[in-house]
Length: 209
Image 1 (cartoon, rainbow, N blue to C red):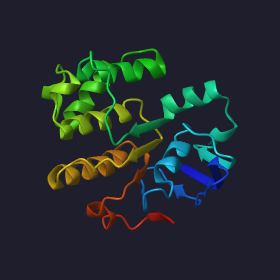
Image 2 (cartoon, rainbow, N blue to C red):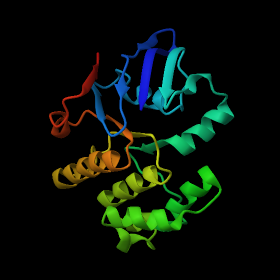
Image 3 (cartoon, rainbow, N blue to C red):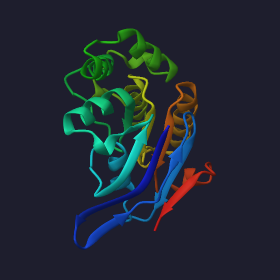
Image 4 (cartoon, rainbow, N blue to C red):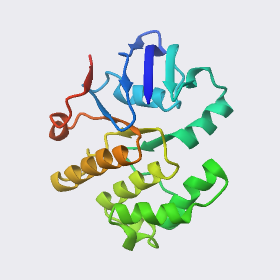
């Protein structure tokens, strides 16, 4: 699970954010919405430990990541937080399967090939395992991103605008996959979005104003 208390952040004196507290249990979903410039992606990056807040606490499975050193924070993120970005970032010279193996190797020092193949099968893209990322459609790339985010059995799954570049059918599929897999793997799922197609699918929402 993940919970936050009194999170504030500032890029400069003119741009200060006071983030609402949140609490998300394992297997549950929270949607973070709001207009552009209100800090949705900033909040997600803070939750991921990519940005350090000015004040406040972020507890993930009883660990306050705000108190961790940069090195310990990086290690904790690799083992406990899965990230699905709006744009998929892959190592272009590696195949889909090798990209997933690299994710587990960076976090644990081992290539978990068996888990990578299982996730690709669950996401119905096992036939793409030996292709390079640029050979995939945008929808397929997003599914690989979900597989990569789940490689290390994270306690928290963070998704930044996961449907914004997808058509209606693929957007629906991605949301179903994210929610079903977060329940299966008992990960707290937090989705940042301005996509009106998915807002009404979730009753647990936080709107940044």
